[in-house]
Image 1 (cartoon, one colour):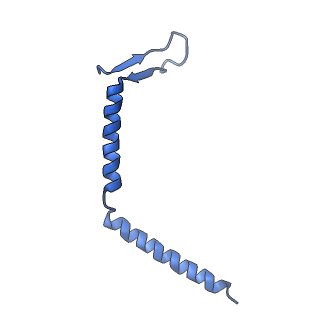
Image 2 (cartoon, rainbow, N blue to C red):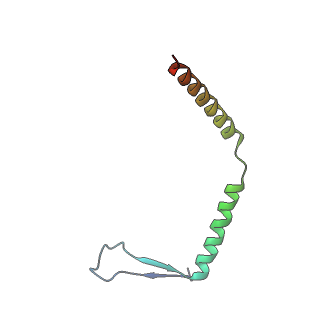
Image 3 (cartoon, rainbow, N blue to C red):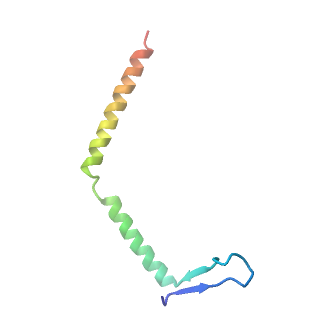
Length: 75
C-alpha cells in the first residue's frame, strides 16, 4: 500500500509483533469520510418492523408489570 508506512521495532526492544502503522493523512481523511458516510446511512436507516414489534411488546409488558406493582403497593 503506497500510503502506509510501517515502522518496525528495534531488535530486542519489545515484543516481536510490536509495530506502528502510519497512514498518509489523505488516506486517513478518505477512510474517515467513508466511515462517516456508512455511519450516517445506518443512523438514517428505518428501524426494521421486527424490532418495532419487539419494542412494542416490551413496552406493553413493562406497563403491565408497573401497573401490577402499583396495585400491589396499595392497601
